[in-house]
Image 1 (cartoon, rainbow, N blue to C red):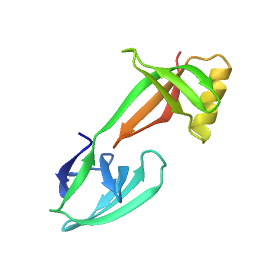
Image 2: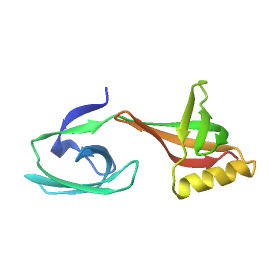
Image 3: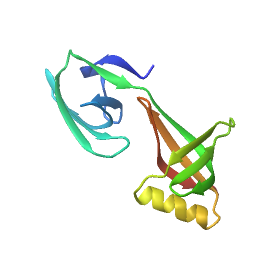
Image 4: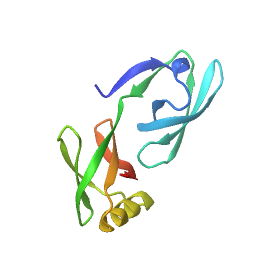
Length: 131
């Protein structure tokens, strides 16, 4: 299952919603009979807005976040594994997150990639250093 219908009035700020075919985190919503949603795409951080009747059904995506150890980085791809032993190979984001992830790994730090999956897409969206 990738998304479920949910009445527009049942969504809350900081929840997830599909706006204009993009999985978004709700950053603002206001209105009563009609609700104006503002959300940020969880992968690109682009802003999307949509006005919807409070009684209309909208789609709530299933969003999954997991921590993966960074095992290796070759070119623009990271080899990852999680505590259950599942492995992934994902493209490193071409942004500050990707640059800092690569830098920490090259410096010999133990890096943890935070991987977000929704609507058939899986990407590295954050990272942290293991202490």
